Image 1 (cartoon, helix red, strand yellow):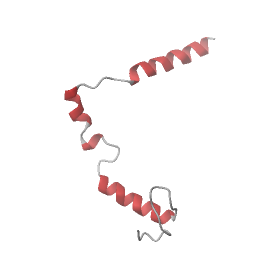
Image 2 (cartoon, helix red, strand yellow):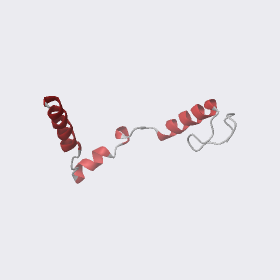
Image 3 (spheres, one colour):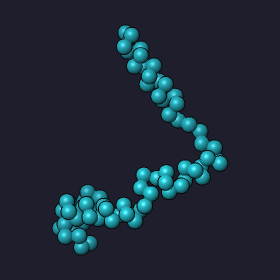
Image 4 (cartoon, helix red, strand yellow):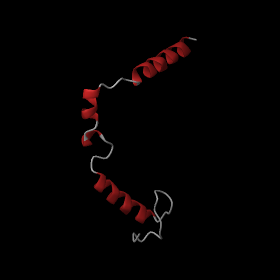
Length: 71
């Protein structure tokens, strides 16, 4: 019982503090390119193109073709 209550307490605390209110003046900081998962979208597209052309898989990420990289 003690282990269950400890687990529930940890989960409850995590859920309680995981949703934070963002003030309007804080949104500018969150909108910076450094805060995104990929700060350089052009580099990400190039990396995806190379990866999926080498994998020769179609339909994995909106790609088509035989893996030659010539969309």
